[in-house]
Length: 189
Image (cartoon, rainbow, N blue to C red; front, top):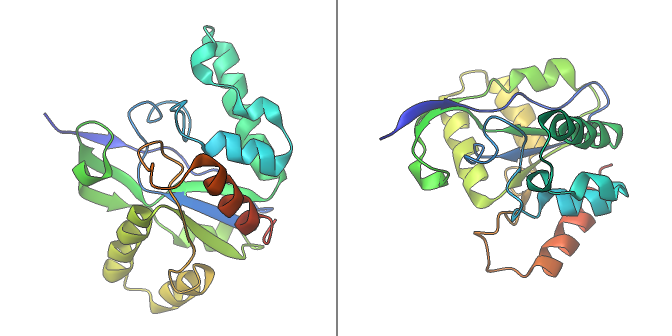
């Protein structure tokens, strides 16, 4: 049975130069931390880009909730220190499981917040083609043309799409994903 689920809060601040947009958190991540599934390569890639191996530790290997929260905080602090922000296109939706294809009745995040909180923002990049597709749907219903133009410029007219870090995206080998992500991110941070 589908039920309404809420996504995670944004992770960005006034230092953010680049925001990575996903679709909606997986079941494993929804109430805890972005990209919390240990099979997802996101935190391994960020550990390499940010030169901090501690953020790649799998939360599944930690039994204590307090220690897990410390890991999540460390991850987010590390990203912010490196001018990287995180958010999802969808704020709330009806969903069963974790598959993007099961997202129903999405309520999109308010992307005007980026303008208020991220004065140094230079780029928005999508963590998958699905994130880009959902963002396009958001843009179609957004009435503020100035905001739409600003967002399109930051996404390079929607061309800033990186391969999904999810293990479900097996078309690209992990080493190749690492290389693509790292080369892109280092241009902006």
